[in-house]
Image 1 (tube, rainbow, N blue to C red):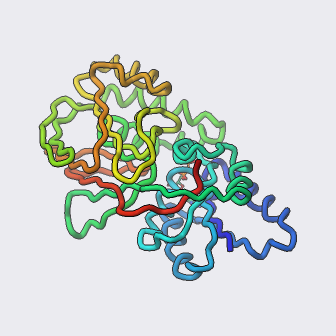
Image 2 (cartoon, rainbow, N blue to C red):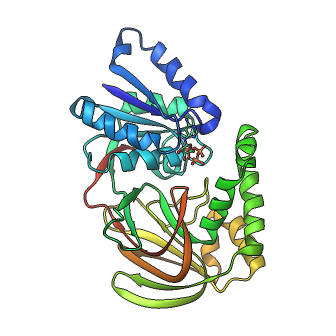
Length: 309
Ligand SMILES: Nc1ncnc2c1ncn2[C@@H]1O[C@H](COP(=O)(O)OP(=O)(O)OP(=O)(O)O)[C@@H](O)[C@H]1O
């Protein structure tokens, strides 16, 4: 059985139409397909864990039709159901997971190829826990998790009522540029205690620390050009001691992965990372934003199967 979890709010609702058209063309095979729609933020997570309980062994492929935020919810709904293979159909505004997996950014093509070619391969997700409180259960992320400036931009954009308008006009990019410029004026660089693979150091004047499973974040920015999908290592990008104006340059060059030549940018592979800050630290995980004082990030143990190149 093929199951679709569709976010009707992502990508101006185009996912619903694409899936319905696809299923209509399946003729006698239509009964092999089940569709579920998320009705509110957080619902895709609930749906995923219910579906796993109901249909676990019968699911040939679970399609996540939405943006990176929908995938994040579904993944966390499947935290304890590791055997369900996932295909991400990118209809959101960012779709970094599709970029990282090098699957088509055209949702119709992506859907057709997922079924016809069934290129299931292992993928190693990231896992994080905040404030190291045993009550805070660990969560999974698919593409990236970031602390500091980029997270504050994402938080500002997510909170903006204008986001929906810009999405509708297919100008999501513009709202991020506006959010970025506004955040440059309000952001205060942080002092962060960092532990990378067991080695501790305190960094001052930090703009952002981003941890990637593949090169992309923020809707196509190649923040970690050397990152590749693998079981053990993330790529960490640290930006510190940078002037406000150079931050603008960073966000122009990052689309081509050229920001790594700036002296204020450090990139390195690592398998576990801990962060600590005296002041609240805004973070984003696949676009979902919140804040913390402390965090620990590792690779999830063992692979899950996803459609990817
Ligand atoms: N029925 C719904 N109504 C409103 N919001 C919803 C609904 N279903 C899911 N959501 C929320 O929509 C948000 C945005 O989804 P998602 O991130 O997948 O799309 P996007 O923002 O268009 O794309 P991207 O993350 O790739 O930029 C998610 O945080 C999710 O919680």
